[in-house]
Image 1 (spheres, rainbow, N blue to C red):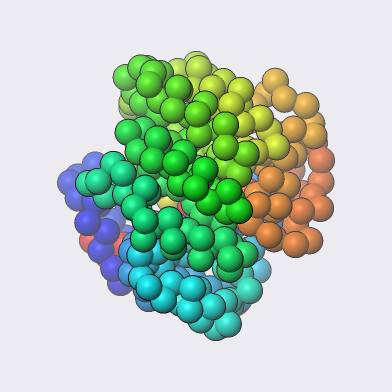
Image 2 (cartoon, rainbow, N blue to C red):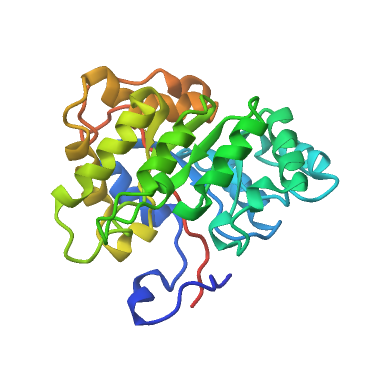
Amino acid sequence: MRDQDWITGPEMTVLRRSFSVDDLRPSAQAAGVTATVLVQTVTIAEETPEMLALAAAEPLVAGVVGWTDLRAPAVGDELARLQSGTGGSYLAGIRHQVQSEPDPDWLRRPEVIRGLRAVAAAGLCYDLVVRPHQIAAATYAAAAVPELTLVLDHAGKPPIASGEIEPWAREIRALAGQPNVMCKLSGLVTEAGPAAEPQDFAPFADVILGAFGASRLMFGSDWPVCLLACGYAEVIGLARMLLAGLSDAERAAVFASTAARVYGLGGLAQVAGGDQVSGGGSSWLLPTKRLTRSSR
């Protein structure tokens, strides 16, 4: 059991417990979701092997985005160790909680760039979890390591609650100018105010779609963190609404094939077309963030 230091106060009560795949399974099945990607939550070495072992034992888990210290001199060796261990073939990428780093230029540090090159050399991608003021450094890192595929989580945490689309939109467009960067349509509900209406999300979704296009965009549920605002089904419903103007093939990319391609999920890249993510037995892959073992 591990505490998460940000899960404090009465408003976080819904998250102050442990979550397992069994908690996710009913919602996933109801939505027709057949595979999911687990994403790291804490910056400790023990979590990633645990998640890889879970992936090896659980058919619902198709891949893992884990954590290792990018700044460590032997980061390449550590990645090789993870890949050769139990469930190592499920390791799809690495992530660090950059959003918690006080240095807005953390992603520009030479030792971090060296670590990102090691991630690329291992055949993995790198998930970016950053706040708007850190997006410029992410753009620098993407340009510095063009051989690495990066995935921007939560669309860079746009300020939906305030409605102030700039300078976030400008930074997003600059980041999207790097062809090795993808974007995850996730985490929007927790960036909005409690009284947010669907139309409040639309201007931000338009920026994301315009900058990245469907082929570089993937859906993410941000479950169970999304429970702070709404349920799994509601997150999927919001995404479907925001993507209603896309073609069937474009929706298939966002809800399935982009994630399968980027995370190297093999046969899952061949998925059913159409826009029905809730159809029973449909072969949709919707990547999700998983918050693990919060004991408080």
